[in-house]
Image (cartoon, rainbow, N blue to C red; front, side, top):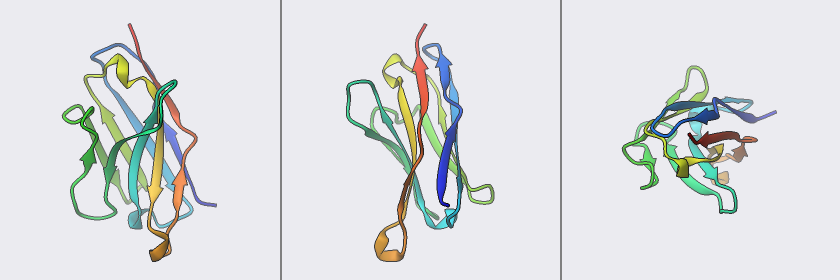
Length: 120
């Protein structure tokens, strides 16, 4: 059964750092683009960062550029989100997403999310 599972969330003070991990299983990880989204209380889910299946450059939401870094380890089937200089407005549930177009035999997988709270 294909799945992605997030970990690494928690409570951190403003200006602090966290690293989220997303472990994938049950599908060909290296063939999927991997993304992080987040949903803050009372707001719509928004894109945070994405990394292509192979090659290419990551892309980021303007709100996190220069502070967050997405990376992937295809050997471990894991994607990471390094979050630095965290702000209270980064507080949200963070979701991992694996995506490959159905046209190419892919699918769209979502994790259950991990809570990140930035507060003093």
